[in-house]
Length: 315
Image (cartoon, rainbow, N blue to C red; front, side, top):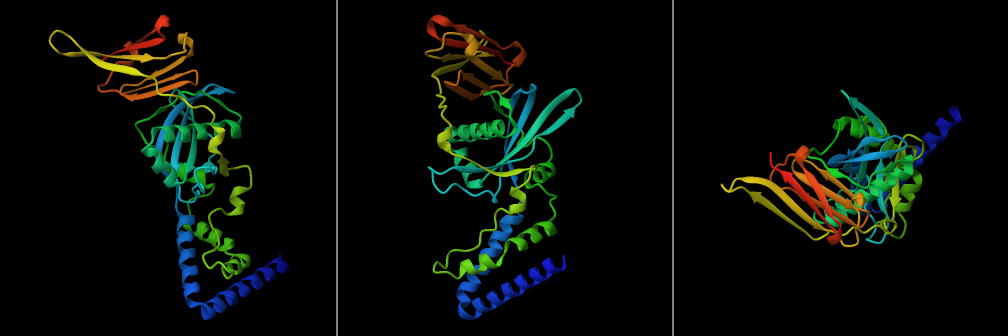
């Protein structure tokens, strides 16, 4: 222990000497380096923030409802380009029981820029969701349903629980600052004085958080791994009125070329939205114009025309 302490003290002394030399020889470079470290330190201390929550099902090893909280986190690096892997962080599954309902919650985090770009592009959003589900399946040996719906709430469970789960530690700023200090090593300082003055230490991911069984902090899944491209089918939606022009129900007609059995159709209907997924070929998610009665909703498949007709009475 004494030898280790002496070695650490020697490193700290060398660290400050290098900083002093840098301040004297290149004041502008020294100032830029310090500002960069402050920025990275702020990123390191930042916490993930909830973006949206989706609901699906775990099919194996035991069937259960699954909520996936998609979060944005500045500590997750953005992909270098559109052809590079997309980094993401996956927290541990947490089983919860509320009254008679049992479900599992898993937190997944992307870089904020990745999620913001997907907000304007439904295809990108679906791809990120599919990537998160694929990562969960591979990491925890789950088999998940391909059907999901985005919930009205942005997070399942408390924000504090989500932060502790993803960060793998208590959200104590003192602990975070200590981790940040440990990452600022002699090698990092030396690298900043090389020919490229814009090359500065990277303080994003402390090694002691990447290793270990508790949390796999960064998983990289290439976008090319997602082979399934689900098309949006042609559809027609209308509100049916009675003779007094009072709205009675919503009728949705969906054309599904190549589909010859209703067993291939996975339908989920809530009061204000609807999701149809068909044999990994088609996917349609719609926000309904009026609230519907889910218990009275019916669906009929016309095999000759490969058409699905859904009737949803209004509440």
